[in-house]
Length: 201
Image 1 (cartoon, helix red, strand yellow):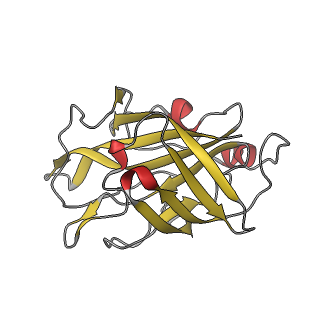
Image 2: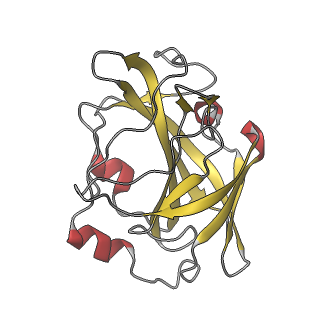
């Protein structure tokens, strides 16, 4: 399973959360890499999903997100890499996860904001609601459509890896950004916002 610096307490989100929307400052923080066994099981092809094809564009009309998607890998220290820390940086798809539409949980991350430029690509991610539809264009020119099934906030202290990154009965997608209040002493947000979504047949 992919390990992350998140937490076990779940807060279902609508337009507001228990954590106030943080002022623009720093954004995404380090996320440890998945184990080799997890990477293997997550990339197995399945007849219940689409064939493997990297994502190139993400469109979420409900929150005005229309962005390119860039592949990201791992840093030298084994943590998940991220797109450039700029307000106009695209979202990033983790290449060790399934492609959106394949069986299993694909992973796309994005910054919530930056200290210099303010709001970034996933600034409004927490505003998504259950039932919202969004799409991912893939390199093979197919479009995978997803429906939001849950939006949650997890403190970074203890992340429920199995719940977020565990096996799914069909193709799924996780959109992840930072959220909650900002810890200026540590230089990071205290929580992460996770959007759970399932492929629309």
